[in-house]
Image (tube, rainbow, N blue to C red; front, top):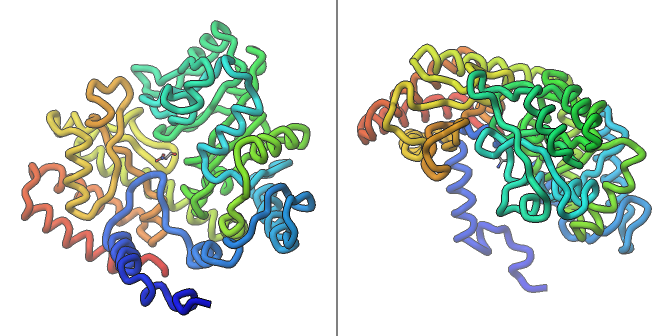
Length: 418
Ligand code: DSN
């Protein structure tokens, strides 16, 4: 065997080793407020680096197209069973490589090309896999969008019902990537049923909250529930689909061979580990803390004059409309200044935004990652103060460095486990 095959990465590829060190340091020394990101446990990371990466296991447990799959079968069964227990679902397919892959498989299972989908507008908080023209969902299907109400900035279920009755979609999608409020999955199901449509709930953002019973579950109402596994759920980067026993064969068929080949077995192993963590009582406390932190951070920003879309948050994220305090500041510029100060967020359209998606008038802020590292409600006032200071200095390098120093202090008090 070539000698390099058995030497550690630091020796065999110093350039890549350095990149890993740089990213570990970046994560350790910044406050991660991107609502869709998190810091996984040591066990989840270890699982992803195992020999399970070496193996092809096309098919499903007990029905594989390759030999040598006994261990694959047992871990995929564990992952599926833990997912079913966690969400009280009849069936879980843990093979989707991502949330977008999970959504693609459901669309292909539920629809024929040209059918109509009713989903939330991306500019109001939806997701690109729910019908963006440039995505397969928007190019294969006819898309009708619901948005949020201009006054309340919440989804108006009467409007969703009206659109469903008018356009007779074959699939209604209830889900979002930037919406701070609760969705009424029972009402969505009623609307879908009356229009002759199936319902897909995409709970990617709130899956951890749902698992902990802190956000309404879609499982009893939706024909298909999709999620990612790496956001509030704090597992490896990946996707999953849940449905009832009757729909299971259709879902499985459209994941493999419909849209994917070999599953990423090392990631499925890590999903199993993450689901095991989510079944522990401490996980509920963690999710409660995420929500409490989001509420306190929202209130602290509001007390400094910031307007939050819909006036606050019910979950782990908030959308900040920058214009109330900084009329000329774009989300793009705000994101850049905050990054210089060691606070990581993403620019985000606010509903009815007059600026382009590349500029935006808003920021999306979430608390899952800082909660993982141990920040609690009392630290949220400081985080809001630092955000405000960084956004109010007109890019002054001295001020941004001062904020950066305070961020570093917080980061060293709350190290990420590794
Ligand atoms: N890109 C994810 C997010 O940030 O919400 C959604 O897939």
